[in-house]
Length: 440
Ligand code: ADP
Ligand code: MG
Image 1 (tube, rainbow, N blue to C red):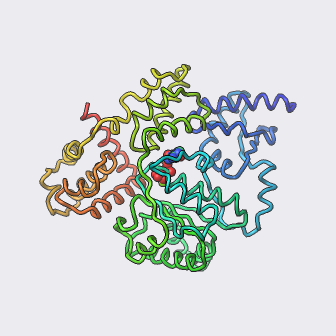
Image 2: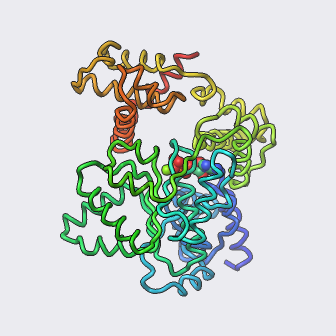
């Protein structure tokens, strides 16, 4: 196939891949190019490693299907960095340290700043410009879906550009704990220490998952000290302030407060409109201001849901072949996100949960601690935290006057189970649906 022809085919493949998987398609797909196309293999060149990782994880099957549909042949697809980055990588020292898996969308450029996140954003920018010397540690916290993970990736991305030689480690708390456990099992603690105590920047997401009285918390404590004493940057995120994380030891709480603790709040209406527009642009989507405003009004609490709504609209537009109008947007997200549009009360939640588990409210409010009572009680707390705007104290108050740390603990526990246990995930989804439906 001559080059010109290949390019034309590739444009078609890209278009098809976008249509097959609108959720994961992005504007920057335009930057992809063909490295090699022969022998049934299409090698696609990407500008950097982050893009390669994204495409490998999320888009391999849609690209493969697209390539097969367009060419009518059985074609395999591979993603690789193209020449530009290969040159850039060579300038990194051979001991470049851990492979940073950054999300290509999660940059400062793609982050919309508003009153709710201005401080957090500014502190992240400052740290990325002079790691170790501004705020150390930097601790950012806020509810789920407000942009913490996005900002952590952005800091790493920026720091990597500014300090090509810096060794940066970014991982989730779960990952840290799992790697530690594996190191113990394999008798490999020294290499674990080397891996984490020698970096220039350690970034751990969702640190609320460190468990009390477990060795991993002790290990993290020593890692923290080693890095801090050497002036290395530490950045942490969590769903609440250090002192509100029930599983954290006092000595860690105090250390986390040594630097800057910054909170990220739910975005204002104007910020939400700007975010919808930014996300639409990223997906190369043309949406009117009217549609952006509609989405921002419908979805209030959580930006992940905001994106979800946009995805639903996009998907409906692709499948129906219609332009994105206000009418189409209304049709797409009708009935969705009622949770944030209407007000769910704790009583609504308690009714559905008690009904589901066949327990009485008085039991949930009692001091009983048997599993059959504790679980529904904790689920009530979790759902109340996620579906209402009530504070931890208020939620605890409704459930027998429990204090906020108990509620926090319940939320953390249920959230962890939701991630690891598909059954729990399904139960929570079903309950949330029932609660939303009960309002209609
Ligand atoms: P968290 O880690 O706090 O749960 P994430 O960082 O995963 O939240 O954010 C959820 C989604 O919302 C991501 O896709 C992220 O890009 C997006 N997001 C959050 N805040 C913003 C913002 N201010 N501007 C643009 N996108 C945002
Ligand atoms: Mg996160």
